[in-house]
Amino acid sequence: MHGFLCVRAQDGHVIAAGELIQVAHGSTVTAHLVFHFRDGSLDDETTVFSERGSFRLVSDHHIQQGPSFPTPMDLTIDVMNGQVTSRVPGKAPAIYSVKIPFDLANGLVGTVVKNIKPNTPETKVSLLVMAPKPLVVKLDITPRGQDPFDLIGLPRKALHYNMQIQLGGVTGVVATLIGKHPSDLQIWVLGGDAPSFLREDGQWFADGPVWSTEFASPDWPDTAHPGCREVTLP
Image (cartoon, rainbow, N blue to C red; front, side, top):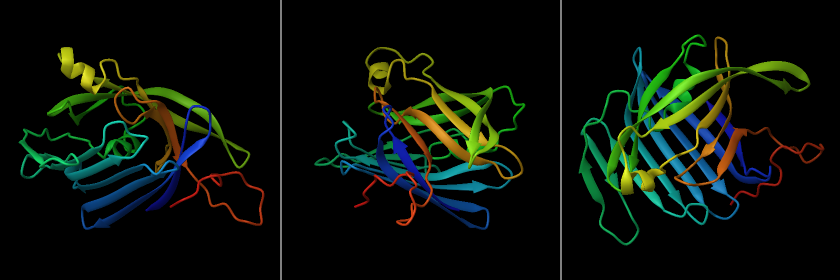
């Protein structure tokens, strides 16, 4: 799969353009998702996972840097070795041994949601965050019914899911560092035999603004189509 995306701020302006490339080798899938921001910032994530009857994370490498991200991040999760590596500019890498749960979904949330059966009342997965050391929290995914949208003038309906980060007993300074009350994320998918991601609204980092991510379509110079034309890629 090779898809193109755009990111919009709450005022509707496009702030970033992205690409998602997924390549399967046997039962192992490598997904590369990268966003280039208009201010020069970068969000780059490479996720490797297996799909032998269920999704299992193998590794995840996530980088955030530039003006859009107050706290730079370079985080690598190695599931097989139970190792998490955090890199900060100007410092030696910090390496942690972590007991990683089987349902860890870093880099996999969109894939998981696309494969949830519509009548499933609740789905929970684990996420690893830095606060400032590795911490595993739960993501609670619940259906919110169907929302109408238009596709080239044709009415369709999207499955709407709410995603809530559950901090459990996390309190004090740690809770503040990862966002004491992080806002819920919203995601919409098109169901059917081949489910497709449509849109996601949510924060990309603790206490950050809510951005909207959706698929982008090509913008040809001989047509008057708005699309994501205002994005200038580096």
